[in-house]
Image 1 (tube, rainbow, N blue to C red):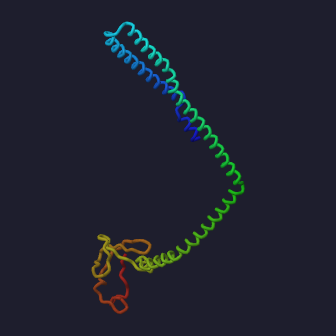
Image 2 (image 1 turned 180 degrees about the horizontal axis):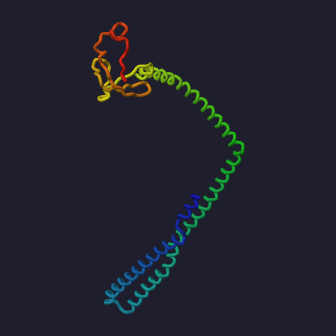
Image 3 (image 1 turned 120 degrees about the vertical axis):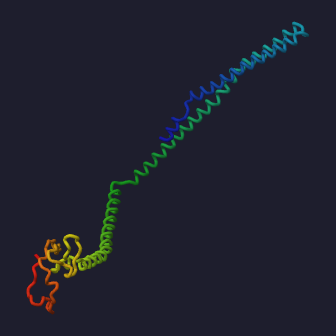
Length: 241
């Protein structure tokens, strides 16, 4: 196909002949102009020389010049044929070489195609596909096994970090029955009983939610406590709700 495309890209024989013909016409035009100019010069010289010549000598000289010009005119078609013949021959030789090259290329491609077809069989692609599938399955198993080996220590470290985070989380403390007390107005955490006054509103944070409360009495904050944690003279506990 590349050779055919190259052959189509070559100029046509008639185009080459037309170019040569144009050159020949241009040369003929120039030759005619040169002949006319030469004839004019000869006539001028002849006219200048006729002053000292006899009419008989002039006629002989004119006849000789006319014969020479006629001979040049007769040679002009032969020269034109010789000028156009070599390009036509070269074009024919190029076309013959191109046809020969196309035949050789076609034969070579047919030979390669026959060899490739002889080496193929219906079972060969199936066998190759089966081999590749087995290799891919083996690689998949190795990848899963390697992934498990890599992820196991990381999973263990993650579980340990999760347990440590759960132990350090304050909500784990709340799950054991403790409560966080915040001032309802400012949201500040209350850690001591002395600043708490009667009527102060609190927000109590339990493990599973929040509740609002109001201090009804803070007199117990000034009473001394015994070793058991109860205030003296009062065995009960004040209500926060």
